[in-house]
Length: 292
Image 1 (cartoon, rainbow, N blue to C red):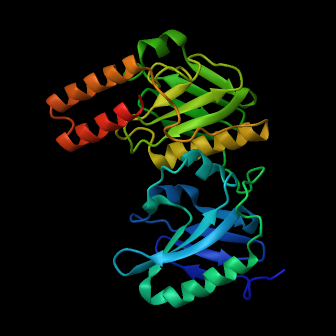
Image 2: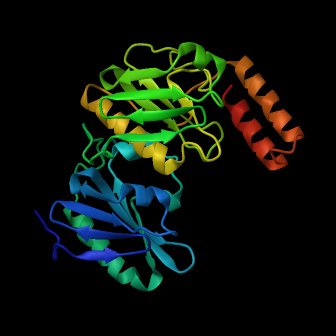
Image 3: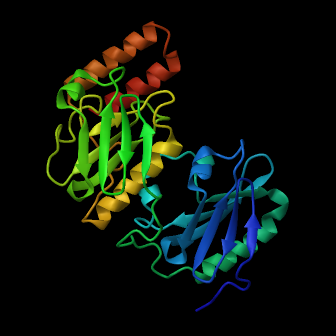
């Protein structure tokens, strides 16, 4: 098998550095005000070569080039939980370099391609990249979510939780009872984290997140990506280790027409109150109509 010509080499870019080993890629993220918070939260990640399907090099913005290691489907719990919702700037597999280092970047891209497994495009049967460590916790808009590696708990806030959640009471879920997670980025409309049970849990995964005791909802400043996504990834990995967990792709759920109509009415109220711009109203209304 071909091996990296110079193991231990380090390629440093903006916000991160890649260290090459014979069987893995160690990605170390910088700490600093300009570094994306998700990178700072991750610290560093060791990615086995078996967890990669390819390497790309493309022009970036403002005189940069972007080297990207492409994660193999099903290999990284973080990327599985993210379900394609991460912005490029927060993609942990991108390394941004000055354009004058393009030749060096191309050299390492070729080196990596030469050692990647032939079956890299095939979905991995198990997670190959370590999940974020536990315990983890974060504040959602309506609850404090905690995960100790064995159980997930939601403690409702009286200022944000719906009456349905108050009626159900604080919730505790054993990892062994979970089939997966549904994470919707807090940077999008109606962001939330929902736990999916092997057996139907309260709400059944069909109720709206603000009414479902198996879900917490995000809001401005609540459930930020760098806190809620590693949390979701850790829960997903633990659930999969105890059985067969399935992350739900973004946009997979279909809604009841009456619920869509209610959401559009609420959106219209926000628009009339000046809390949503004309463009935001049009875009979100089209998204809701598309779910019918």
